[in-house]
Image 1 (cartoon, helix red, strand yellow):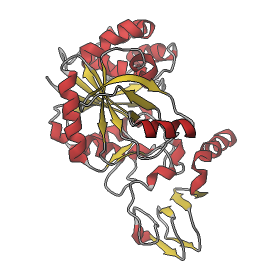
Image 2: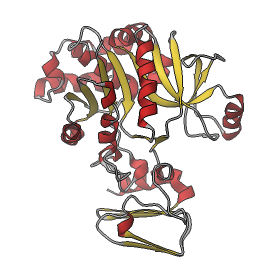
Image 3: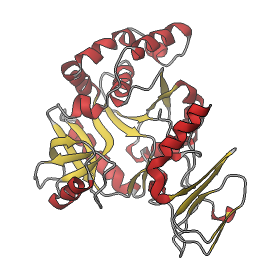
Length: 355
């Protein structure tokens, strides 16, 4: 059975402003110095020998998505959402499209903005997930937690010695004391947002658990496979009408929290969700003073420690500072205490309101 990567690449990534913005989100940036996040996401799947890759994105990011797909050499298509509606509609959109191309296939759902250090370990785990998906299971990858993180959702597995564990429940982002409790108990895993299942199986779950959403997609099921990838006036108007009438809801809440036959595979493969500037330190190698930059030839660190700098066209010198992030991108510059990473959203909102 074919394995089809489905990459969700529609987010605007404003928590990494000013590098990432609505015009060019983080998935199209070379944050690590190794390639864009979308390019890396596709390339690390090549050992699975997929014959096709599907990217779900926004209309304004189609051209950039095609450019990244071409870099990898894999065949694929791109379908555009008229407006963001979270992961449940995006995945149903992808399943609707793929059901017109294949009698059935394994869907491998991945966000476009993750960093994974140990690709070989990651691919081995995906192969296990694919194997179990053949048995009509809904499989997800859980990240073995290394500290009490409060910014991620968690997956609680049953106490089971096997590598692929049945899921007891999905839980929301905890407070610090609850996160510490999860870490002590040892059967909780960070929710990576990576899922593996058959097209036919996930469509059955949509019909059963999200019938209103499934029915709302009937006009899209009536389109041809070519029309689903087109942005011509008629098919685009149909898509826009569908998406404008549905609620934004995650696949976790809509399907995974309620389904049976849920399984999680714990993984330790150097995973990082690059959702904030604080998380970038997980993927950049530090110098002896714990300073970091993907382009160190453009940065001078002097009497500074634990600073992270992203230069653009200018040489940046950081003198006598500790624990700061400096980002130069186009006409915008960010200078921020690393501990203030979660406050950046308010800055972005103020910029939007001023405009």
